[in-house]
Amino acid sequence: MFELRVAEHSRKPDTKIFEVWNGEEFMASIYPTETGIKVVSKHIADDPEGAIVIEKSPPIPAILIRLTKPSKSG
Image (tube, rainbow, N blue to C red; front, side, top):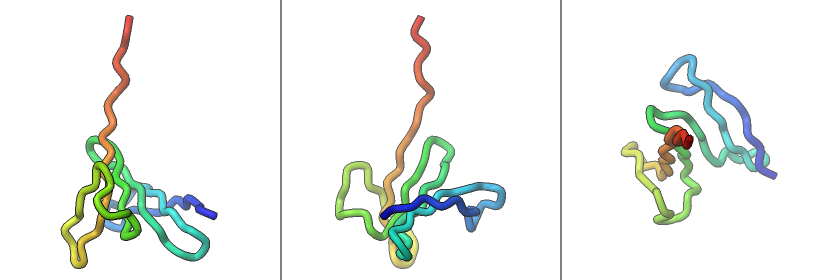
């Protein structure tokens, strides 16, 4: 069963992230960006829609989700 855990961001003090766990296996991180949220996981399927690659060694697949404020309709 998948579980979300709150953790500290390793590179940005005072920033909380979610870790996604499947039992004892770490599956992904979910954290805020300037424009939305980013999902980072070595378990992301090949070429999903919206996929990006974080240039590290080895490269890490990620999905960047840009969020916008809802429009105010009058």
